[in-house]
Length: 134
Image 1: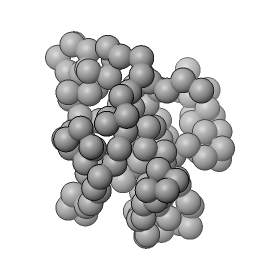
Image 2 (image 1 turned 135 degrees about the vertical axis):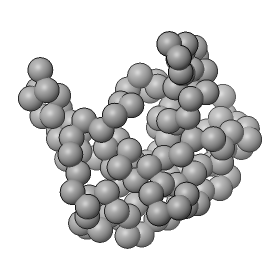
Image 3 (image 1 turned 90 degrees about the horizontal axis):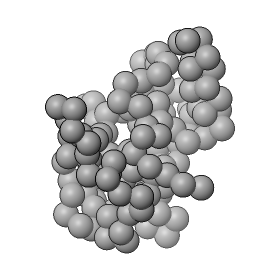
Image 4 (image 1 turned 120 degrees about the vertical axis):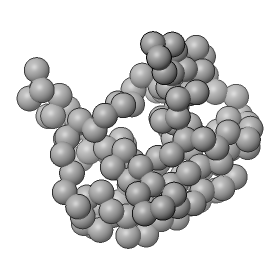
């Protein structure tokens, strides 16, 4: 299916308790092209690299000051934009991802990552939260 930057919220769409927004184990798989997180509450999230690049929260990708970001202006990513070459912690609240095109300014907070978890359970939770918000 088609991914784009507008699929990912700028703000969490539902409240998370502490165990839901704290990672326990973080790993990556170059073979599967995923970044995987086991959360303190036992939930498991697996994020495809392309999804993570489309979800990049940095101002250059998402836009700022009413201007569109670079991801708003394209329909597909180039291969070098979806090659993950490094990831690591940012303090105790987030992680950074470094892409093969050199992009590394996106800081993915734990709360943001849990909010965009692509599993069916979290997708359902987002849909339910959207229904109650209107």
